Image 1: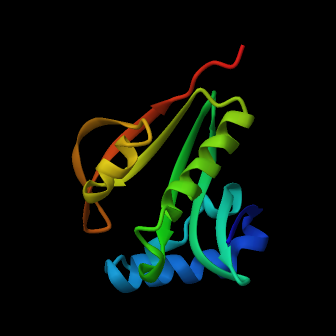
Image 2 (image 1 turned 30 degrees about the vertical axis):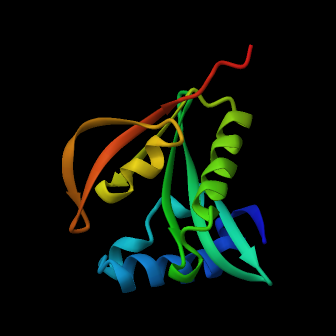
Length: 145
């Protein structure tokens, strides 16, 4: 298994298949909300096993030292094996290499403990996104002076 960072032009097929199965199929997110204007701008992490994408996430540079992680998804049969952690670490490492000061994300409420284990802190109140309760989270990155 390997995790690669790819632009959307190279990640679209694999990333979308995972997101389609997880978000649209399992969670009932409307298909028209799954792809957005940030996909072409993002760096996409693809977890590949035998050439098949089994997990994904993306990092969007928001400017002014801030980035956003989103669309984190792992196929059901590969969950609870540390794959999400590896994808998240790859995206955090990428953000640090780009001299990012902080990373934000919109976490599904059920995923908050996962992100907290990796240093993210909850911000603000719960809100609805695509019919699923979410909260904003932030990770302040150490200054690399």
